[in-house]
Length: 79
Image (cartoon, rainbow, N blue to C red; front, side, top):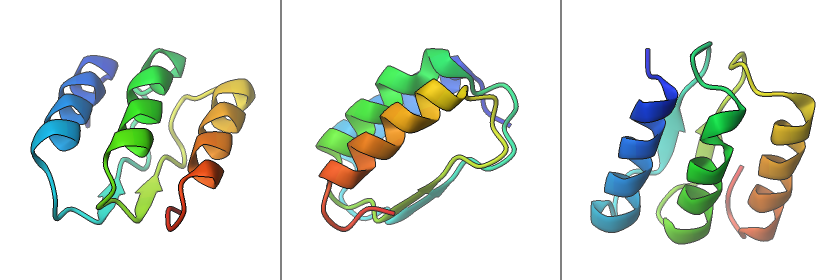
């Protein structure tokens, strides 16, 4: 499990130091909610090695899920 604070720390590390990770599975982390949206958006925007992020069964609202879906759509090659 990972919390919003963990998502923030993970995003910082993956943005600045990761060039190889292609799939990030955060599925069923109920502690991840709308407060993580900005960190995930930044991760999608600035980490070009990622090809897939799974956020299913997290505690994101429909609005946050929509925002993240739009961010992913702008990023070529991300599912």
